[in-house]
Image (tube, rainbow, N blue to C red):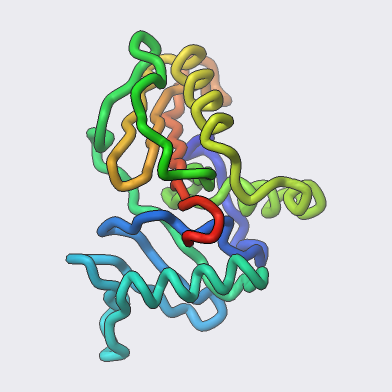
Length: 200
């Protein structure tokens, strides 16, 4: 998926796909109906802009996201932090493959893709163009399916590389042909790992 992907003015109302096993600074938590946004910084969730509404803790955000996932509440949205120019964690490419990440603590991953400079769940992006198809897509995939997707991306695309960080994120960047001949597009996937069932 790529920066060439565009989102409609309003995103469809889907609940968060999963609750991240771990949060990291730069993550965003939103209430789309009210426009309220919190950014994780220094281990706390601060309102953006800071209007004096107070900070949240990881435990509070985890509780609200968990409830939203369980009851299918689209009034909450999570967006993972965007990586910098260098992907965090253990580097993987088509020569090293995807061997090595210890994923025993995780059972599933929510896949986010880059669109209009944001990271959005794959299911939301599909729903923006075809709601019927989106509702048939699973919110998360298994870690084995995630590694298969990453392995195929690394094998099939130029300049493909990935990074697995110890905070439960797997990042993939690669280039693909754009719509115009000779034009290449940088693409990014972020897999946000979730805890085993019952531990979220």
